[in-house]
Length: 218
Image (cartoon, rainbow, N blue to C red; front, side, top):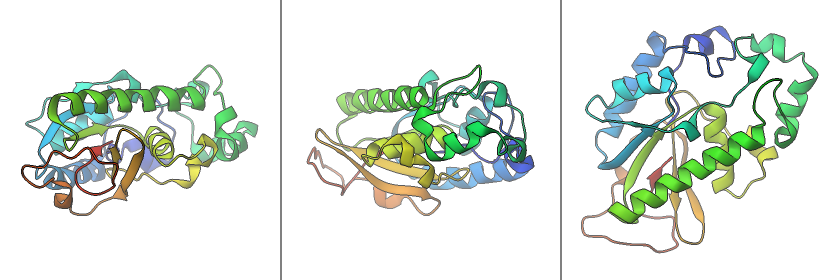
């Protein structure tokens, strides 16, 4: 799940790892997402440590106790953080970020390839832990950021990172990935609809290489 809309999203700025918070729209988005999520038997909830993700989880799932996961933190945009997107679009690096992100390294910041690698590693590690403890059909939730989620989805689809800008992850949207022993399946993308179809049938213990049934919320 991506966090709800922030003051930076609303103003057209690049928040990065700055402590920007949800605006009124973002808080409402988080609460609406919670109405959908509370129907799910979530085995675990993890979140980026940034305040906008923690606020989203507090509003969406007030009874949960999310575990902070550094691997899901926003990409380190370095000197770009806090600047307007309209201004950044004039930078030579902007075209690289859009068309060849695997080569993009932000000034005094993180490489997008490094962001992708540590985020995918975190998601796969958590999925393995949840599967080992709760079974292959267990559902779990991770709250993170747009570029991070897009990178995780691209990996699940077998796409090169250079294709990840074609993926959309709106504020408070949910993308669902089912990991199996042989390959992942993208079950939902940028979703804001009802989630109850994700609940596995009682008594199932499937580990088959199929896109049906339960899945892991990434």
